[in-house]
Image 1 (cartoon, rainbow, N blue to C red):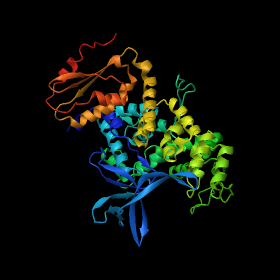
Image 2 (cartoon, rainbow, N blue to C red):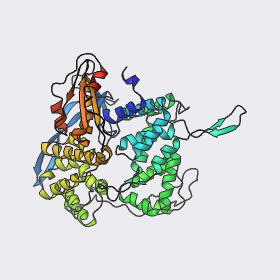
Image 3 (spheres, helix red, strand yellow):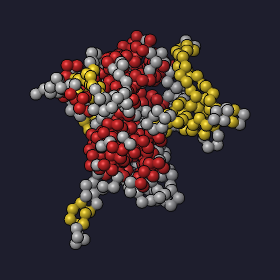
Image 4 (spheres, one colour):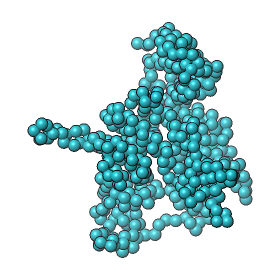
Length: 524
């Protein structure tokens, strides 16, 4: 009932803060019920293998780092949990239903949850969603950008003519699908800042455009679009402006071969090919196919006109290389980390030696180093002085809160604390100029019905507190009475310490939460 009373701004905050799981998993897993999650389910890394004609499911728990043939290698511990039936349902060996086996790809439950949050805001204020999408485009949350771009491409305000009583067009409605197109087509260069002297390029790349297509093709998302009146078809999913926007995106890159080469070099060649196929893009010259090494065969209806039967150059491959040869390639050619990930054979994988060579060769940007923290830790490379020095240098340059989310997935206390410190430092730097003369007040309802809200409030305050000087930030907790909570240390640990002993109970008097802070007057 409380959720039904949320306004559009509150729903946006709820969407940003309430869920941090990935919308896409690149490994297979089990999706099982979880009443503590806002989506109602949780994902666990799980694989199966045939044994005596039966698919046996194994949960892949993180194992210790082992030294094999002189090299540190991360391991997983397969834990048998049951079997997978013909409907991909996983049952325990005693017959209890555990969950659903899911191949790598979009985590449907997360995608649907996010899309429904956007839909609820749209119902309350459609213009608000357009502004939310515009704002989100320059932020870090890629999954949220994909969901918002997908929604804006298909929502129903698309510049339709508005007719008067005489049947003539008087004006045209707002076209919010333009916002979705702009999210796919824009490449924004942010202005320089002290933290980012060269600014930053913000855009959606080929894999994200492709992800929007898969997102909109999900039956659950297509059904939401029908419920909202965005689609009249009971069979086909609504794609809105996706095909048109992607065709523009591809044409621009065909006309600017340097951009097309860059996509191929970054390992997005097959993504571009799928975009062209799914959008029905028609290249203007054979060069497009040549760059992509995409051999063309004539269609049954004979409609194709370019590069039919033409030979293309062979793809670059490392399939026949040894680990040592791959390390030499990495050191001499210095490909990006994304390219390394696409070229390393699955039978070898990213080994400690390959990762170390990539780091030393500068193949990983500062952001790549932070994102790869868990991999670097699992490979045992945090123990290597040179690697650790580069990682620590990258941490000091962080300008967003990504490190805080990564901290939840690392093993060692030292790495976790370094990531949290980097996130707090980044947040302080981001808002130092903005908060200037502001005084900030947090009032936390601790009445009897708010048990879960206290934990949620603590999490929200942890994200905000490091940004503000302690003498400008004030916290109260209230029920029918209130008291000021003194935050002595601007850190996550400081928040936990300050809230010790605060438990839900009592009635609700909002005025008390305000009055107890009345001695801290707003600044000019």
